[in-house]
Length: 480
Image (tube, rainbow, N blue to C red; front, side):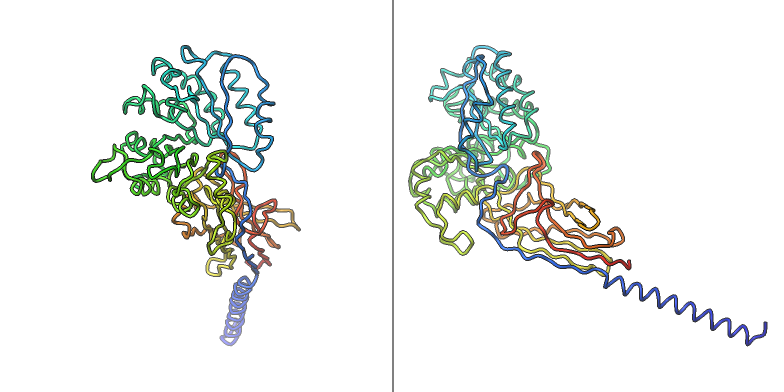
């Protein structure tokens, strides 16, 4: 072959290489145009949301004894007119067994009660006690050992139904189970009782003590903000219950006088400092109870401010009638979708968490050749989501009958709500186009409570579909 032939061969080879390069480049450029996306706009709504572990509750009481009962009928009767609430407080009086172990029949009855409750779609606040009449010193066992033994007997039930029990209030003792007027309230006794409850309950069940100073004495912590949510210590499970909420400057004896600097951590502080303490603690563990005694502290505007500060998750719909009626007569005046709403409806909407989707963004990430999904979420409720919630993006291709689900790593529990309701969290995900089959995909966001599997609804106009809240669509035309 002569040199001229070699030249012709070299030119042809070069042309082939250049053509291949052009095709490759065209393919790359084409891939940048093969993903079309549309995002949905979201509007906040003031509608009722039946979300787990928050809101108003009604109280139901059971005196435990050996006599058999139809617990399905009992529970159905309790909840007949209780359709909106997702929480119920169940008080269980153990005075029948103050001098002996809980009998086999008593435990069997209690199991039947929990079985009946498990058939309903409510989460439970449980309070065991010995006294309903303010005579706890007469009704409680003669020894603390008996109380501890009763706790141990209840362990199988408390663990079996742990996913249904949001919170266990108190330590069994005191008038009305509220940790006052009992022979077993020394610092050492309280610690022993709460430690026993920690052992016999499921780790997903929150415990609660009556006052902030009890919390500090038990945990030996004066600054809850120093506690990490992932710590495996009692402090991350221990919250508060306040049955004197907004009843006076001291919340009916819940607070004291003086400051941390003056009193130290083991004496109750004045209202202002105890509210600041609860603002920190409420980011970690729940706070709830009942309001009482009509007075200026529970006028609607004052109540909203303090309940935001305390991160209140749940309160009684039964107490206090005068306060609740006052809220019902009051009107909300604020620059939001709640403006003009009556106070009692407003409180229901904001107790606990209320998540709102502010913006959804579906984009073609050309640099990484991926579908980028980002959703800005805000919590306009009083308190965080406390139990683990699982967020996922779901893609659905109706033509191909294909579903793909992608878990999100961001944790909505970091949205504190309350005084920090302006805080936003971006839930985000990147899906490589090479892993996404061609076709038109509808993109959804779904959030569920891990313990129950119940969907968590967002405070937006849009109603969720089978796969969650529609964020938009992505058409993948290939070319990757």
